[in-house]
Image (tube, rainbow, N blue to C red; front, side, top):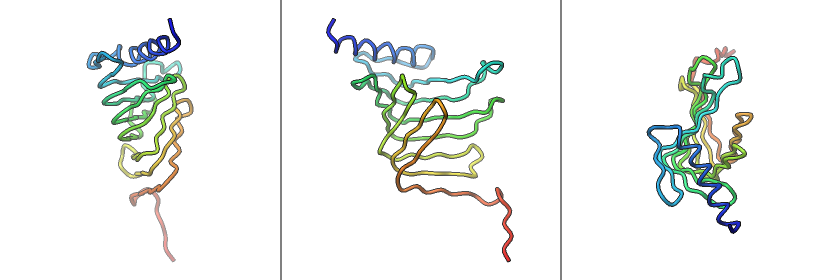
Length: 152
């Protein structure tokens, strides 16, 4: 089997492992997946609780084991299952094996209570340490009530 053929099957297998556990996930011939979700769980003793959920409306394989994801959504939960924050982007490249998503495009992040909202252009998200770097045109809104300010 040629190297390109092995790479194709690797990507198809990776998409299968993202999409297969979900009843609503659909795999379309040609290496394209729709409505997929990938969950990451907490370490024991909370291994049944979802720590992070990455989902997308569409994913298409790219060379090098990458996926182009459309309508990216990343949800981060606390150990009690309460949603902490949501990250959304219209498009990104997701390195499946590294757990890294990036894009030069727009991104929005909001806490679940809506008190902090950040957006910008160009981002790098690392699943392993749950870190998000936004590189350009960063704009943050913090609603009052989080900190009490006293003016002289």
